Image (cartoon, rainbow, N blue to C red; front, side, top):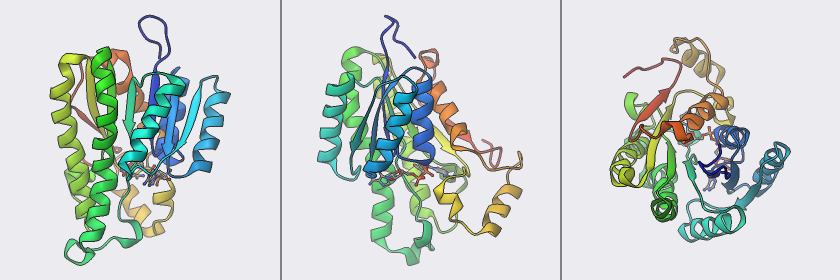
Length: 253
Ligand SMILES: NC(=O)c1ccc[n+]([C@@H]2O[C@H](COP(=O)([O-])OP(=O)(O)OC[C@H]3O[C@@H](n4cnc5c(N)ncnc54)[C@H](O)[C@@H]3O)[C@@H](O)[C@H]2O)c1
């Protein structure tokens, strides 16, 4: 992915050490981007950075707790110092309640706060750092990772689904604010994707998920990376504020 002047695009991906984030990083590197990797798992992003460099692109691994605003701020500064201004921001970090999943009225406010913060506030905080430079340079691509549970709802995941619906509302609103500056903001809403999270689920749950999915299999992290690559491309300049559901047809809007 080169700039119109033949330079290299710089991408920053949160939650980059494994799963969907790792696949996004590698896909953007294959597309020709240099990539800043942010994750709380320092060893994990070091390993993925080495994979990026093996693809012939530059990488910088910045161990960052995305729940810490000042850490996000300093990692953005370091990323830009090392690789140059950020053209593409992928807000991927997020998670469901996992083993703590419970009906909303039993789960308690601390879990709800955590899920809203990790899924929604992290995207807002990272966008706050990325937007001024994108606006000044009149170019940018922001891709937010939501979830199809934002549309379908999900038992024992009310706070997660609410946070992910918030990501979609944030995407739409930010896209309106930035459209005139050449910055697009889109979201991807994955269904079940095989990652560490799904590997921890009981086999019966996974079988049920597959049976509910028309294509008959769970998605791969690369399926989400493919969609990110599209939204991050220059050719997607006429698409903004949209949310693309990538879920094998489990739910259609
Ligand atoms: N896997 C799925 O089926 C699925 C479905 C819908 C949406 N999603 C969304 O896709 C995104 C990626 O999911 P995944 O399944 O690849 O997750 P994952 O748990 O496999 O990876 C998440 C990454 O985020 C990092 N991380 C966690 N907390 C962090 C923090 N505080 N600061 C920095 N990094 C942190 C982890 O170290 C890990 O590398 C999430 O937003 C998730 O909600 C996933």
